[in-house]
Each structure stands twice: as C-alpha cells, then as structure tokens.
Image (cartoon, each protein chain N blue to C red):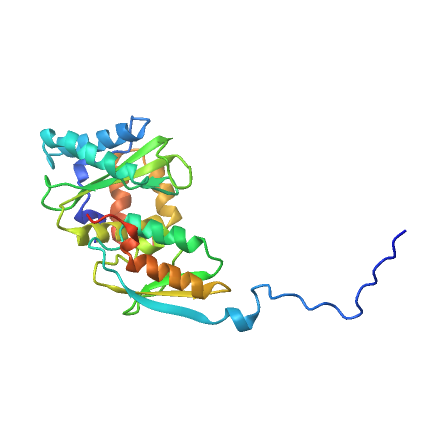
Length: 158
Length: 118
C-alpha cells in the first residue's frame, strides 16, 4: 500500500498549531471533516476513540513520529492524513522525544489487513532518515505531498 | 601482618562469558502461528519488541514463507512485515539466552500477546 492509497490530500498540514496530544488529534480530524472525508457529527466520537487507543500505550513510536489511529464505523475505507509540527508536541512517546510528524489513520472495523498494510508503508518509509528529516522541514502542504509522492515512487529507498 | 596468598601458577579458567562460539553461533528458531484477529499491528509489535529487548541474543523475525528477516527488537521493523492473522512467522535467535528467548517470544505470540479480545 502507498501513501496515495489512504492519505487525503486536501487534509495534509505542514503547520500544526496545537501543543498537546488531544489538540493535534482534534486538528487532524477536523482537517478530514473539512476535506469532506468524515462528517462533523462524527468527529467527537472519532477523537474520543483515538484518545482511548492512546491510553493503551502511546502511538508515539520514536524518531519524532506518532501514528494515532482507531477503527471507526463512520468510514468504509481506510483514510488518513499527515501533519507536521514545527515545535514538536509531547506525545508520551516510547523514547520520550517530542513528536513532529503525525500520521493519523481511521479504518473500518472489519478491515484489519488494510490497517496493517498502511502501517507497513509508514514504518518502511520512516526507517529512512532522509525522508523523516525532509518531512520535518516541510513548509507547506505541497511540500508534504511532494515528499509522500516521492516516497511512493521509492525515491528514498525500496 | 597476614600472609599473602600466592596466586595460582596456572591461570584459572574463565567461566563461560556467553561469547564462546560453541554456544552462540547456533541459531535457535521456531515457527509460530499468529492467531490474534488483527495481526501484528502496533501494540503486538511493540510488546514483541519490548520482550525481545530483554534478551541478550540477536533476535530476528520473518514470515515462514521466507521474507528477509527483520530485527525482532525493533517495532518499526516488525511492522514492515505486515503480518496478518493466520500467518506463520519464524522467530530466530542467536546468543547465550537464545533458547529462552525463542521459547518466551513464541509463547507470547501463541497467547495472542495477552491482549484482550477485540
């Protein structure tokens, strides 16, 4: 699976304005509402579900990256968005580092395979230091999208 | 003044330090079925990596069907396998505690990582 298969392009942000975990998650979910991928009425329930998942263990996986996610019946296919924080956000990460890169995923409850393939793609690309560094330096949504496209074309390695 | 004990003329043989080739080059490996319904997603991968990190041995994980093995102590690496429910994985370890590592990790997978049923 590639980024293009699940990242909602209009929802990508290079400038997260929140400074805490719930704020960032709320901002990213709102961007999916604004992009028309989920309805405003579902957003509270989705934010709550993602926060509940965070309580089981932070999805801040180290290297300044977090993958907040949930299953939710409001989507019929896996959707996601990417956001970058200039300052970094305390996400209770495994390595204690501030998080600058966020990959938010919402998947239908009955499609665990798609979720696994999205995680496969994200984790494979994140192992490349250049990809991570460039993404953290992104100044606009177009910068982010261009890097995701380049990653999809394996320009950062297989 | 107490008499000084003389050192033995022949050096005392060092106890095994866990680095002797005879013990350590042997790969211990076991195949185990992933049976939790959601596969090796972030939580199981993180639990596996954390458990593996508790062992001195080098630990690798692969699909039984033969992908290149990945570092079993790295959650990111485990996620790149995208292992679904019903897939058999192979856990391999090399090192002084390899048998215990493989046994413990295989049991963790077999217990569905002690995660509540979703």
